[in-house]
Image (cartoon, rainbow, N blue to C red):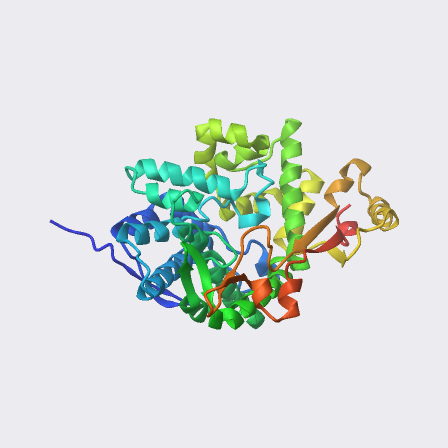
Length: 413
């Protein structure tokens, strides 16, 4: 009788060899729901700026799972009791933490659906998988939802110093080539401990965590909120909105059957939860479906949809201007006048310019705290423990406003 070896070893470009910890983890990775993450880019459209940023949510999930195994080993070596069922559950929870992401990750999160974030979708998918695996994910779901009595497990999954953030900062820095985002992951993991069932950082790890927070802030401005990527996102979102508008008037807009459901109407949380087939359709769409549509829509008879598709496909991005203040009515009207002078129909103006904002905070006190365990036994928030004024400043939310518009529209209209 053939017995399949499920204790596989993967070669990860960031960490080297990664061992799958259990047969259940192997089976979850093999499941079609998880395999879909191979076709969802981790950084959405960031490759418009950094050509190497083509890694997937699949890679990130594997990396986060690996770090979870590393931190649990370290915590256990310091005398903290970690039961085997807890170890497996924690690794499963972090493995599946992003399984609810749609095409291009965050880019289309509120375009295909209305008011349904990827965390809620993740919970729904985990529940479906739990049924398929006869309740073996019960503990992982408790940890993910923060209903398990040992709170540090959830803090390792979702906090301001969790394995998700440690992996994506490290991995995204690696694939973009932004050296300022490089962090000492191994050092930070070794400095973590448990105090009264909460995650803490030993005092000697303070500098490493300060470096991490500064690196995270840098990555947000240089990578995640880069204005070129934002311009690409605007065009992609407007292409989908135009397709939806055309379909609402009865016009033919080709798209895969599962994606078509989300173009026919914007689906809210209630409908998403009550209509079982909607989640199944969501789990069948990925970046490839969107790109396939864009390539098809290039030849659509509607000039607006065709223009948007061509602009996205050929990286003819909108000009974008960032500022500390909201763009004035004068600036906006000037852009509108430019578009109208170049043949844009007044009712279609919204597809050729966009006003928006982005914000970044390196350390949000309201979410969760990074606690430093002093040698005296006292626990302090990192803002209190650090003598760097920059750490205190990281709690301030910095907001930027932008105005973007098509500069090449005259070539098409």
